[in-house]
Image 1 (tube, rainbow, N blue to C red):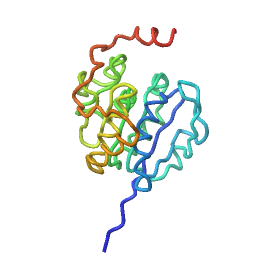
Image 2 (image 1 turned 120 degrees about the vertical axis):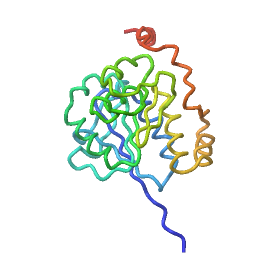
Image 3 (image 1 turned 90 degrees about the vertical axis):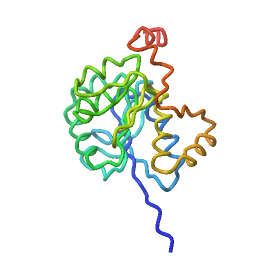
Length: 217
């Protein structure tokens, strides 16, 4: 008799001015798993949440009524700065990370994990251009500068923005098998950077002038 397929639930965490690709790059990959993975959007309060790029996303749940989560996905973005002082978010992350199979962050999302004390004694990485933001949140973290993404137990942290998509495929390979991840990369016509230790953007460590050059601000 065939055993039923396990259905996991992924909680995509939203907060004002999160980075769009941090969230939706990984969700594109995870969404390809179909009925084997349920994706729920969560914010401090249910409702629309504006991204750093402008478009809003709808949080189906607030922290208070969020269902059980097997996977966490925490984006970064300019909104990270305000959330560093959000005790409600930190407590939510601490509570949910204890029971999560995998807790993922993209970009400066790792600064929020660190602020909540979740990465103490672990290896982690972050957005290279704003790496010092993450590093300054905890001296108890082994911050890895040269990494596309880093896995340490249940925590997986990715470098900046597009690196989250590579990380997502890495987590899919871990949970569902390498061939499944490769098939998803092919279906989405995505060139997967499979080497977690190879980070072509490490040379831009803390070179924040690139943001002004890109945005004109």
